Image (cartoon, rainbow, N blue to C red; front, top):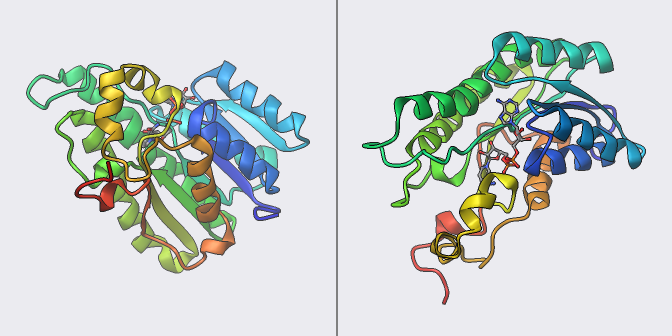
Length: 257
Ligand code: NAD
C-alpha cells in the first residue's frame, strides 16, 4: 500500500477530484480527513470509504475562513494523531467570471478568497502540523490555465490559479530542507461537477475539446492518480514542480483532427 501509516487531509473532498483522491488514498492505506464546506458531500465520501473498509473522518470547513481551517488541521491531528499529506484541492469556478473588463469585483473577491487565500490558509495552518510529524507532502491544485491564456476568459479563476502555482514554488523552496515537499497539480479540463454546466453546452464543450491532443476530457480518477504519486514517498525527489496532467494541452500548437 502506497500510503500506509499516513494521514492525509483533502479539502473539497466531497466531490470530483477531491472525492476520487480520498477514495484512492484510503485504498492505499491512508487515514483520510475529508474536509468540505458541503456536509452532504463530505459525509457521503466518508461513507464510501468506510464501505470499502477504509478509515476516514469528515470535518465541515470553509477554506476561506481562517478559524475553520485552523480547526480542520486540529481535527486531523486530534482524530488520527498527525498530518503527513495536505491536499489543498478545494476550488470553485464562478458563472459570472469572465473578461477582466466586465467581471464584478465581488466575483473576483469570492473566487480569490476560496481558490487562492484558501490555499494560503491551508498552508499557514497545515505546515506547522506537517513539521510536527517530521515533514510531509503538500499538493496544491492549480490548473493548466495557470500556464496558458484562453480567449474564452475567466479572469479571476485564471489569476487565482497562477497565484497558487507561484505560491507553491516558494513554499517548496522555503521548506525543502525541513522535509516538506510542495507541488502544484495542474489538471486540464476534467469531467466533474465544477465544469458540468459549461461542458453541457455543446458549442462550449467542442471549443475546448479541439485543444486536447488526447481527444477527451480527463476523468477525476486520472487526476487522483497523479495526486497519489505526489502524496506518496515515490515522489520523494519531486518538489516545486508544475505537475501537469492535461492530455497534452500545454504541449500543443495544432492538435490532430
Ligand atoms: P468539484 O466542484 O467537483 O468539487 C469541489 C469541492 O470543493 C466541492 O465538494 C465543494 O463543496 C468544495 N468546496 C467549494 N468551496 C469550498 C470552500 N470554500 N471550502 C471547502 N470546500 C469547498 O470540483 P473539481 O473539479 O473536483 O475541482 C477540484 C479542484 O480542481 C479545484 O481547485 C479546481 O479548480 C481544480 N481544477 C478542476 C478542473 C476541472 O476541469 N474540473 C481543472 C483544473 C483544476
